[in-house]
Amino acid sequence: MKTESNNQRGAWGSRLAFVLAASGSAVGLGNIWKFPYVVGENGGGAFVLIYLICVFVIGTPIMLAEFTLGRKTSLNPVGAFDQLKPKSPWTGIGYMGVLAGFLILSFYGVVGGWTFAYVAKSISGSVLAFPSPKEAGEFFGNFIGNTGEVLFYHALFMATNIAIVIRGVKGGIEKACNILMPTLVVILFLLMIRSLTLDGAMEGVAFYLTPDFSKINGSVILIALGQAFFSLSLGMGAMITYGSYLSVKENLTSCTVYVVMFDTLIALLVGMVIFPAVFAMGLEPTEGPGLVFSVLPTVFADMPMGHGVAVIFFLLLAIAAITSGISLLETVVAYFIDQRGWDRKRAVLIVGLVIFALGVPSGLSFGVMGDVKLFGMNFFDHVDNIASNYLLPLGGMFTAIFVGWVWGTKNAHEEIEKHENKFHFPWAQCWEFLIRYITPVAVGIVFIAKILP
Ligand code: PFF
Image (tube, rainbow, N blue to C red; front, side, top):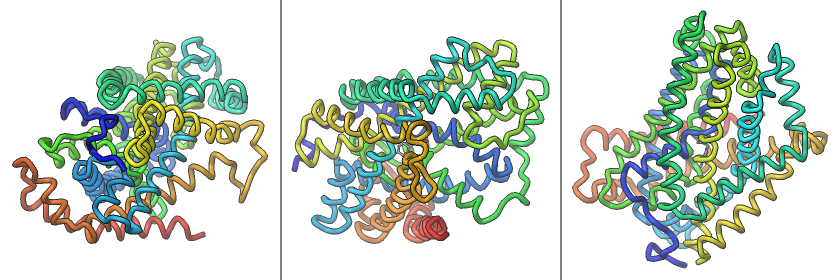
């Protein structure tokens, strides 16, 4: 086994670089594609409020725990647990994380490919040619069922991820995020200004910001918690891996706060782009997963300057998908570099190609393999379900138990306070209480509720 002396690992060049990369991991399809449609389906403002509570009470403590494990050990998730409790079953959490990264990227890469395709199709204008979401939805359905096109864009997305990660932490991931994350913020602000200045935009703002608590029930809370987890990239050790490249000088608590704020702010801003536009054009926000791919193109088609807006919107989606995709790939790659002693180039190429191959049946799940179903779900849905609904919550719960009770909050506290960084009263006590009691119980409830029929 190799340790931190392994020169294939790398390190962040600065704290800002780390915050941008970790925010890049967090801000992804979860924020731009999923968040608006779950808000739309679950009653708007009230859901947003519950989501925020989940982010701050459950997500934030786990993120700090993951950063701390990574920074303490300078290792990938498997190595991190193994170093702190050698040869114990706790290493299994690390393996679960690496497996989750593998599985998530296999289908995330497919959707990433769709975003690349929609950049091309919005430039050519073909996605804007439809009078209503119904036709735009049919166009989308035909596209994701077209084997050649889907595989081409899927391969392009994975090749982009491989090209970035192969250049290493500083030369690849850091450089890409330094350019892509500010670009994403600028694009988002431009879109928001366009959206909010449309006639009738305020109706969408009201839907988004006025809580209607009659819409809240148990299952809505579960969806909000699951969304917080996925959106913050928690439960699979991506944040352990990114934390492992961080210098001991840096303040882990402030990094955690920045990343959580960044991810949350982006999700909230995306809502400010999408709901005003949807309402201004007289459409419904309850479209489900097709909201971004079927409803928005119709919105753009009707809007002044809509062609340009469509191109930059899909560019935003593609950028967000890449900066998350590279964190998924890096987590698996770090395992092979640290634990198996592979060099980076070999690890990235082999892991990238195998993940692409595993993603092929997911890519074909809406076309030629559409009829291959088990328990009513296609291949894509199964991989998504196993990874997002089982591996991530389990990983998050066990990480909280490990840090709260096994490795211990005292050790974690020491790591957080290294280099004269202070973890003051009452925040430290608050975090200890949340990570030991609230987080494991809350995630456990979500998990059990999910597996119950
Ligand atoms: N946080 C990403 C998103 O919101 O799209 C998805 C993700 C990335 C989940 C990395 C988990 C992960 F480790």
